Each structure stands twice: as C-alpha cells, then as structure tokens.
Image (cartoon, rainbow, N blue to C red):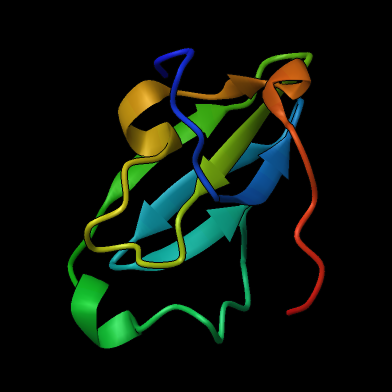
Length: 89
C-alpha cells in the first residue's frame, strides 16, 4: 500500500486468522462472516485466498467489495498503519 494513501477499510481478520472469499462470502477461520453492509449481488462469483494473516498485521476489506482496493490487492497491513477508528455500524 502506498505510504501516502489514506483508505477507509474494515478490519476483517487479525494476526493468525485465515481469510478467504468463496462465491462472494467472506470466510474467517473457516466460518462465514455476517456482512449485512456488503451487497452480495455485486460480488457473486468472487473467490480469494485462503491466506493467513501474519503477526503484527491486519487484513482489511472495503465495504464496496466489487471495486475496492484492499488487502486482496496490497496484502495485509501493519497494525501500525491504522490511523483511527470509525464508530458506528
């Protein structure tokens, strides 16, 4: 991820967890994640992973999953790259 980029992403997995996407469904540690904020109709047929998040890193995904640039593109990010927390949903 470029150092100058500021991105708003959702942390979906932390160090030691496995992440995959199977037919648009996020799978963390073998279990389907509940993501009511993701429009499943737009990502049907999407596959990714399985990857294990390294120590000291986080796996992030955008809610606009079909066009998001996120850890599927640039890999897990260092925990130290987090600049803030969004409160709400």
